[in-house]
Length: 326
Image (cartoon, rainbow, N blue to C red; front, side, top):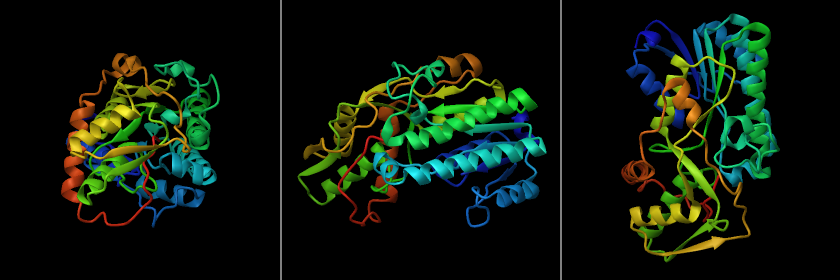
């Protein structure tokens, strides 16, 4: 509570899925001065806008959550945009934060930065041992360049930046647009809509054999803020649940929890993405005492309930019949 009480905090992406949770928890921890830049006022890919943002806000601490993200389909469709915008936002924000001398900069990376053939569980030491999985390599590499910037700035200027690597996030208020969503919100929407419309099947991308690890969004927000309070080293830190599940098992779980009893049609012509993803979570436990609290089943229950109460009657757009592993 005392850590945040007198700080002015700039949260990029603070109105988004993860950002809104971070802002809520910031307020709960005693922070009363939070600034959330909006894209209509500040284009974070433009140097002049980023400079103006820091002149307006004069932040003590920056939490950089803004990103252009999506599942496999979105990554394949917009590799150039995903690379350029994610790299430029981070590069400009970190440089301006260094220039004005912020107390700490918290940058959020991505599990997509890990090499395609990283041994499971992914350890932070393996981050540079190969090229990322091709379907989301531009996004992953753009985010990984921010780690290089933070580490080199710390070495040359003593810049206090930290870099966190979360796995796939999910939870209430996630992105349920089937064109751009990740696997959990896409599957929840597909199952509930198919049940409502009495369709006999849903189609899911890939073979179902790939595995993923998922972190409930509130746990991710807690991990980010706890790291901001307690961690100040150049080494990247994983944020995950430490629990791996195949896409087939995930689909079965969501079908059961949404009471969808139809068939699952797998589309093997579409990519699975990286074969396995599961993080080693020893470093956050050791360095700042963070471990995930919400189980996958409990998190899915909360997410399904939120979707049913907020989106069922409004999700009328007929989007492509697909879910992606992301």
